[in-house]
Image (cartoon, rainbow, N blue to C red; front, side, top):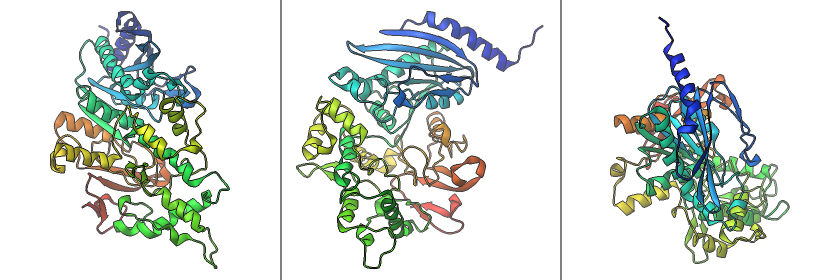
Length: 483
């Protein structure tokens, strides 16, 4: 009798099934390029990836069957899709999302999903790279970006999953941030049967309004050397002064604003005086700062997008250059004019963009949450049954930052896989066991490095509650309360 270890048997079966999968798939309007067994530890390279994707390679954590395909979505549009099928499958399916105006399969997120036993799918969202040229005069590509590519990825990914494992998935999940967050909400609205649970971070609601807002910063700051422009040193001084004015509002001076909504910053405090020795502002520059942290309104006075919340991470927006996504979107989608100049952006452009919104019409996360509450006539307690919003203090865009930002939304942000401290595990427990999270326990490491040890932990509150320091060691999560 030959005894084969179970794990080895599973891996052998995975490789055998994978080699023949490509010939057995018959998917509508889809060409399957290959199905290949990839051993754990393999460093996959992606020579065909557009350079702007910044994803030249990905180390695969577990044994998988990798399936690559192209589905035709229209006469002049198509979507690239990859499905990764782990040997040690839990029965769960997961779709990843995209970012910005991409254009890029987020292989790191697909790998994170399969490392946790999910069959996972990722798409290029209907075009290659984080560039806007593919949108020009091509409504099909815009439609793919808006919603179609991700939905088709889910539909086809589930079919491939069933063909490979010989049975249906048990539960279906979504994990995405930024544009990926927007995609998650779009799926919930238009295709509610696609997923049993969704984790959507920093959702780019009202995408066309968002691109107007992002582009407005250049019109406020001007280029370097302008009277309205602030240097990096001056912006750093603004942030430090902002902390002086607002950091203690949560009961603890620690460099983190638990509720930025409470911070009504006065930049006039930094205007240069006769005896000022450090970085300071002219009156004109103080007006720039106030404009940066103010709501953006259209020509009729209506809200285009809420204000930038107090944050130290403003470099790309206030660096004195047009925001690239704004340039791409207005040139190739709003106006179909590749010569349009972002320096001319103004209220009339905001109105033109809003009139053509093909994605989601809403505001930021809190505004969207409250819009849902008002529209459905539900209290927060009633919304809790299916929709919970957690504000992660001190989080940069999707990852990093001075706060307790290791929450499991990405592989690089995993402090543990317990549902209390991992949003992916939390949504699985909510769906499969009916235990919903009341908070998300975040971890901050010394210098942002796991090997350096834990610096502090914090329970991120379920909106509309906010975190307030109570007593004891402020580095301990239990020293804070959601109120």
